[in-house]
Length: 125
Image 1 (cartoon, rainbow, N blue to C red):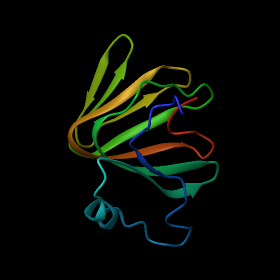
Image 2: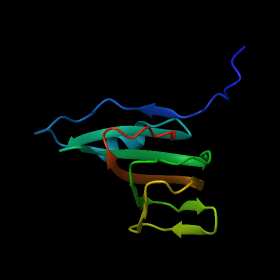
Image 3: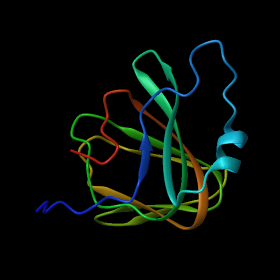
């Protein structure tokens, strides 16, 4: 029996749009039926841009070696840190430095752009 909890996230690490192709975010958002969807859009040097279409709560985690940038395109998005919560609205962004324990929440459906290294494991270390 597997003691690990099932993580109900649709995480797609494949690069959806290679170089020299148009990145069509509205198409992906409109087609999304998952409550917590994460899709790698493109790769730029050693980093990736990922799209999150999110509603609900992610688990507490950290990335020991990588920073993580969140930028809200639609909705409200909350980054919980151990000592405080940061609420982001449309057109606002926030960097979680490497090693900082955090979780993210979207009380209602939110669309978020994330920028991080291609090596990062979205669910944490």
